[in-house]
Image (spheres, rainbow, N blue to C red):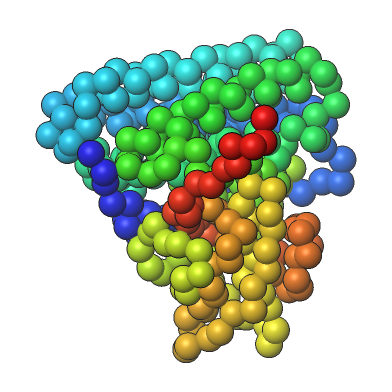
Length: 306
């Protein structure tokens, strides 16, 4: 059964940024990365257990999801718990005190909005591990990050398929840096224990998608920014291995940019102060990211390539 995910912008725009303690530092250690990963895993762990504990299987069946999907959902909850336990153990072994779970606010009200949000969270989690891998110095920790990344990608495919989306919507994963991921994740956090270690990250001002998704390549898409825009700026889309900047148009406070033909699947949009030219750095980001689901065009392949 195919579902609409037009509620994604409303789900994300309803969130109020209430971030855990952040401390932007020059040198990021492996322990910092583990604490950062644990912060994300705590969020997913609480999210899935909250959904399963408050919405029984019959609610998912009534919403059009299958019994097989609900069974898989419980496996996902198990996976996220295991990620939390492993990272806590690794931090303790490294002589650090693991960060504790925070208090969260997830804007789902029923199985449909829960699964819609799950798809976004899993996509962000996959992007987080992919983007953070290059910062890890320990080969052991890097191997663990890769193992978790694979599982997060499997979760992403499950949620996307359950929503009627193309599960492999992009030939490549989309990497996001620490700060953009933190900007999205912190939106769900209302408070954290004061004893938690400060994270070496910062949040950018919000960029909100103001129309339903999914959208398609070549279609204008609109946003609003939580602040004053400079006289010249760009909307930069990050998807797979592609980073593409587009010159926007304005109508009042509404920013409009045509979705480029280089993006597909769960895509991240930013307001930047310059053209990205294939590479996006934190110093270029003014607002965002916003999450935009872009339906891929029909697949093509050459049978002569063997």
